Image (tube, rainbow over all chains, first blue to last red; front, side):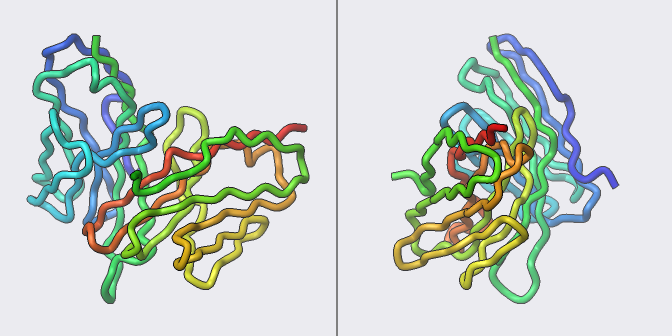
Length: 118
Length: 111
Protein backbone atom coordinates (compact mmCIF):
# COMPACT_ATOMS: atom_id res chain seq x y z
CA UNK A 1 0.00 0.00 0.00
CA UNK A 2 1.94 2.99 -1.29
CA UNK A 3 -0.54 5.67 -0.15
CA UNK A 4 -0.12 8.86 -2.18
CA UNK A 5 2.76 9.09 -4.63
CA UNK A 6 3.92 12.02 -6.75
CA UNK A 7 5.99 12.15 -9.91
CA UNK A 8 8.47 13.74 -10.37
CA UNK A 9 10.13 14.62 -7.06
CA UNK A 10 12.18 17.47 -8.51
CA UNK A 11 12.02 19.48 -11.72
CA UNK A 12 13.64 22.57 -13.17
CA UNK A 13 11.84 24.35 -15.99
CA UNK A 14 12.56 27.36 -18.12
CA UNK A 15 9.96 30.11 -18.38
CA UNK A 16 7.35 29.19 -20.94
CA UNK A 17 7.89 25.43 -20.78
CA UNK A 18 5.06 23.11 -19.91
CA UNK A 19 4.90 20.07 -17.67
CA UNK A 20 2.50 17.72 -15.93
CA UNK A 21 2.73 16.57 -12.33
CA UNK A 22 1.22 13.18 -11.60
CA UNK A 23 -0.43 12.18 -8.36
CA UNK A 24 -1.59 8.64 -7.68
CA UNK A 25 -3.35 7.13 -4.67
CA UNK A 26 -4.19 3.51 -3.95
CA UNK A 27 -6.60 4.07 -1.06
CA UNK A 28 -9.73 4.39 -3.21
CA UNK A 29 -10.29 7.95 -1.96
CA UNK A 30 -12.93 10.06 -3.62
CA UNK A 31 -11.33 13.44 -3.02
CA UNK A 32 -8.00 14.61 -4.34
CA UNK A 33 -6.25 17.97 -4.04
CA UNK A 34 -3.31 19.92 -5.36
CA UNK A 35 -1.61 22.45 -3.08
CA UNK A 36 1.38 24.67 -3.37
CA UNK A 37 3.51 25.64 -0.40
CA UNK A 38 5.57 28.80 -0.36
CA UNK A 39 7.58 30.31 2.51
CA UNK A 40 5.38 32.41 4.78
CA UNK A 41 2.23 31.50 2.83
CA UNK A 42 1.30 28.09 4.10
CA UNK A 43 -0.36 25.53 1.85
CA UNK A 44 -2.75 27.01 -0.67
CA UNK A 45 -5.26 24.98 -2.63
CA UNK A 46 -4.86 25.11 -6.41
CA UNK A 47 -7.54 22.70 -7.64
CA UNK A 48 -9.40 19.79 -6.20
CA UNK A 49 -11.62 16.92 -7.31
CA UNK A 50 -14.55 15.30 -5.57
CA UNK A 51 -14.64 12.30 -7.87
CA UNK A 52 -13.59 10.81 -11.17
CA UNK A 53 -14.27 13.18 -14.04
CA UNK A 54 -14.85 16.22 -11.81
CA UNK A 55 -12.57 19.12 -10.91
CA UNK A 56 -13.01 22.46 -9.16
CA UNK A 57 -10.96 25.58 -8.59
CA UNK A 58 -9.34 26.30 -5.30
CA UNK A 59 -7.80 29.42 -3.90
CA UNK A 60 -5.01 29.93 -6.49
CA UNK A 61 -6.01 28.19 -9.76
CA UNK A 62 -4.61 30.64 -12.33
CA UNK A 63 -1.90 29.20 -14.55
CA UNK A 64 -2.79 25.59 -13.75
CA UNK A 65 -5.09 22.97 -15.21
CA UNK A 66 -6.07 19.59 -13.81
CA UNK A 67 -7.67 16.37 -14.92
CA UNK A 68 -9.06 13.35 -13.12
CA UNK A 69 -9.76 10.75 -15.76
CA UNK A 70 -9.27 7.86 -13.33
CA UNK A 71 -10.24 7.79 -9.68
CA UNK A 72 -6.72 6.99 -8.55
CA UNK A 73 -4.92 9.70 -10.55
CA UNK A 74 -4.99 13.49 -10.40
CA UNK A 75 -2.83 15.42 -12.87
CA UNK A 76 -1.68 19.01 -12.51
CA UNK A 77 -0.57 20.81 -15.65
CA UNK A 78 1.40 23.97 -16.16
CA UNK A 79 0.93 25.11 -19.75
CA UNK A 80 3.43 27.96 -19.72
CA UNK A 81 5.55 27.99 -16.59
CA UNK A 82 6.42 31.27 -14.89
CA UNK A 83 8.99 32.00 -12.14
CA UNK A 84 6.07 32.76 -9.79
CA UNK A 85 5.19 29.07 -10.00
CA UNK A 86 8.42 28.07 -8.32
CA UNK A 87 7.15 26.21 -5.28
CA UNK A 88 6.72 22.88 -3.57
CA UNK A 89 3.61 21.10 -4.83
CA UNK A 90 1.75 18.63 -2.65
CA UNK A 91 -0.98 16.29 -3.69
CA UNK A 92 -3.42 14.95 -1.12
CA UNK A 93 -6.38 12.63 -1.00
CA UNK A 94 -9.17 12.05 1.46
CA UNK A 95 -12.15 9.78 1.88
CA UNK A 96 -15.80 10.69 1.86
CA UNK A 97 -17.24 10.71 5.38
CA UNK A 98 -20.51 8.88 5.69
CA UNK A 99 -23.70 10.25 7.16
CA UNK A 100 -23.66 13.89 6.19
CA UNK A 101 -21.14 16.77 6.44
CA UNK A 102 -17.50 16.01 5.92
CA UNK A 103 -16.44 15.98 9.51
CA UNK A 104 -12.93 14.96 10.43
CA UNK A 105 -11.72 13.97 6.99
CA UNK A 106 -8.04 13.30 7.29
CA UNK A 107 -6.01 14.23 4.24
CA UNK A 108 -3.13 12.00 3.19
CA UNK A 109 -0.30 13.81 1.46
CA UNK A 110 2.22 12.76 -1.11
CA UNK A 111 5.94 13.51 -0.58
CA UNK A 112 5.84 16.66 -2.74
CA UNK A 113 7.36 17.91 -5.97
CA UNK A 114 9.95 20.68 -5.82
CA UNK A 115 9.61 22.80 -8.93
CA UNK A 116 11.93 25.61 -9.95
CA UNK A 117 11.10 27.84 -12.90
CA UNK A 118 14.02 29.87 -14.21
CA UNK B 1 -8.25 38.72 6.35
CA UNK B 2 -6.71 35.23 6.14
CA UNK B 3 -8.97 32.25 6.70
CA UNK B 4 -6.60 30.81 9.28
CA UNK B 5 -3.96 32.65 11.27
CA UNK B 6 -1.20 31.27 13.43
CA UNK B 7 1.74 32.73 15.30
CA UNK B 8 4.70 31.55 13.19
CA UNK B 9 7.02 31.42 16.18
CA UNK B 10 9.63 30.11 16.41
CA UNK B 11 9.05 28.53 19.76
CA UNK B 12 12.26 27.25 21.35
CA UNK B 13 11.57 25.26 24.50
CA UNK B 14 13.64 22.93 26.70
CA UNK B 15 12.91 19.24 26.89
CA UNK B 16 10.13 18.51 29.32
CA UNK B 17 8.48 21.90 28.92
CA UNK B 18 4.83 22.50 28.16
CA UNK B 19 4.08 24.60 25.10
CA UNK B 20 0.81 25.85 23.65
CA UNK B 21 -0.10 27.05 20.17
CA UNK B 22 -3.17 28.99 19.19
CA UNK B 23 -4.86 29.42 15.86
CA UNK B 24 -7.76 31.66 14.86
CA UNK B 25 -10.15 31.14 11.97
CA UNK B 26 -12.40 33.66 10.24
CA UNK B 27 -15.28 31.56 8.89
CA UNK B 28 -17.86 30.94 11.58
CA UNK B 29 -19.37 28.16 9.44
CA UNK B 30 -16.26 26.04 9.90
CA UNK B 31 -17.03 22.52 10.98
CA UNK B 32 -13.85 20.49 10.94
CA UNK B 33 -10.57 21.35 12.58
CA UNK B 34 -7.21 19.65 12.60
CA UNK B 35 -3.63 19.94 13.67
CA UNK B 36 -1.06 18.63 11.21
CA UNK B 37 2.65 18.19 11.80
CA UNK B 38 5.21 18.91 9.09
CA UNK B 39 8.86 17.99 9.41
CA UNK B 40 11.46 19.90 7.44
CA UNK B 41 11.11 19.27 3.69
CA UNK B 42 8.49 16.58 4.28
CA UNK B 43 4.77 16.33 3.69
CA UNK B 44 2.22 17.30 6.35
CA UNK B 45 0.80 14.47 8.43
CA UNK B 46 -2.26 14.48 10.63
CA UNK B 47 -1.43 14.94 14.29
CA UNK B 48 -4.97 15.05 15.57
CA UNK B 49 -8.48 16.14 14.75
CA UNK B 50 -10.06 18.70 17.06
CA UNK B 51 -13.45 17.80 18.48
CA UNK B 52 -15.96 20.25 19.89
CA UNK B 53 -15.54 18.90 23.39
CA UNK B 54 -11.76 18.93 23.20
CA UNK B 55 -9.65 15.82 22.93
CA UNK B 56 -6.42 14.37 24.18
CA UNK B 57 -3.94 11.98 22.64
CA UNK B 58 -1.11 11.15 24.99
CA UNK B 59 0.90 14.31 25.59
CA UNK B 60 -1.17 16.32 23.11
CA UNK B 61 -4.40 18.14 23.91
CA UNK B 62 -6.53 20.03 21.41
CA UNK B 63 -9.26 22.49 22.30
CA UNK B 64 -11.87 24.30 20.24
CA UNK B 65 -13.53 27.58 21.20
CA UNK B 66 -16.30 28.27 18.69
CA UNK B 67 -17.42 31.51 20.31
CA UNK B 68 -13.98 33.06 19.92
CA UNK B 69 -13.17 31.08 16.78
CA UNK B 70 -9.86 29.66 17.85
CA UNK B 71 -8.32 26.29 18.36
CA UNK B 72 -5.35 25.40 20.48
CA UNK B 73 -2.77 22.66 20.79
CA UNK B 74 -1.02 21.89 24.06
CA UNK B 75 2.08 19.72 24.15
CA UNK B 76 3.17 18.46 27.56
CA UNK B 77 6.56 17.03 28.47
CA UNK B 78 8.12 18.11 25.17
CA UNK B 79 10.48 15.67 23.47
CA UNK B 80 13.27 16.40 21.00
CA UNK B 81 11.22 14.51 18.44
CA UNK B 82 8.40 17.06 18.76
CA UNK B 83 10.54 19.59 16.87
CA UNK B 84 8.56 20.37 13.73
CA UNK B 85 6.13 22.86 12.24
CA UNK B 86 2.54 22.55 13.41
CA UNK B 87 -0.17 23.48 10.94
CA UNK B 88 -3.67 24.51 11.90
CA UNK B 89 -6.25 23.36 9.34
CA UNK B 90 -9.90 24.35 9.01
CA UNK B 91 -12.65 23.01 6.76
CA UNK B 92 -15.50 25.53 6.37
CA UNK B 93 -18.64 23.58 5.55
CA UNK B 94 -19.86 26.30 3.17
CA UNK B 95 -16.85 25.91 0.85
CA UNK B 96 -17.38 22.30 -0.10
CA UNK B 97 -14.49 20.05 0.73
CA UNK B 98 -11.83 22.77 0.75
CA UNK B 99 -9.35 22.98 3.57
CA UNK B 100 -7.55 26.12 4.69
CA UNK B 101 -4.11 25.88 6.23
CA UNK B 102 -2.39 28.25 8.57
CA UNK B 103 1.21 29.19 7.81
CA UNK B 104 2.40 26.98 10.64
CA UNK B 105 4.11 27.42 13.98
CA UNK B 106 7.71 26.31 14.26
CA UNK B 107 8.73 24.41 17.39
CA UNK B 108 12.27 23.49 18.38
CA UNK B 109 12.77 21.42 21.52
CA UNK B 110 16.21 21.99 22.99
CA UNK B 111 18.16 19.34 24.95
